[in-house]
Length: 376
Image (cartoon, rainbow, N blue to C red):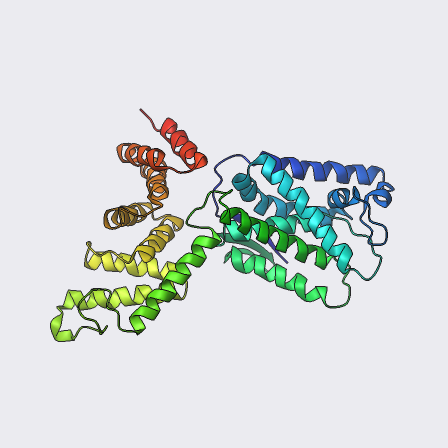
């Protein structure tokens, strides 16, 4: 058995609404234990669906395993989505996700089996999480012959459950409302994507649109290089420099940069970060391309190599001062210098810049809150 236990996405505010929804589900379950007959009136039946049942069915559960599994997933993924949407927005999204999942179940169900459970609404939350935090990692605990943990990218974890539900939607009934899960996930993904497109949610460098934009830029860049573009401007035809044109250090640096690019292209950021540290040991003035430098800096911060991460972010700002999301880099540097390196003067400098440049109230509030915590 495997279960998610946490994500590595930090919270910027307390997810009160998600906790209240978990509490509401728990209280309703206790009420079910005392009065089992209430399920008859409030489940969602494809044969005779009532409007109120599209809301009530999502707060009912069959047993302890059912509610514990649903609430665990809601806690793991819902906290961050609540943080992004705000309390009222998250409540509206959660209820709408449950309704849409119920509609999906009713219109696709050939048998008159009633449905109950929060899993459709929870699936909507995971769909939105996939849009907002595709690069986060999920810590999984496993129980087989041994007990242990491992990390997996959230995009793979959520995609696995979605594809599993999609597969079972076309097979014989397993006693689980797989079509409700599919409908909920699609609802959450589409709504999350739409909110980013129309800018009702603040964009950042970690959401799925940013991920797609970087992938497209890398694809265009690779295409240009294949067609003869030389990124160093030495000629109109790209070529590797001849060994006699380079000294030993330059050859090693050139080789390391190539290996870093290869590691990033296969999404092995841990290897890219290690190679980057080797590159800096060879030549401290080396700076990668804009996205590669940012990816490596983020990975160093993820690995809790805070001095190296701060240096990589500083190099990024010096090399790319016109980056359109530099306020987020300033905020990250301020947090690193304040919380982990105790270099408070630098922390104040970067946090003040983050406040000045910020285009989002939450980000500015986080910077101001951190400024208030720095010892005088």
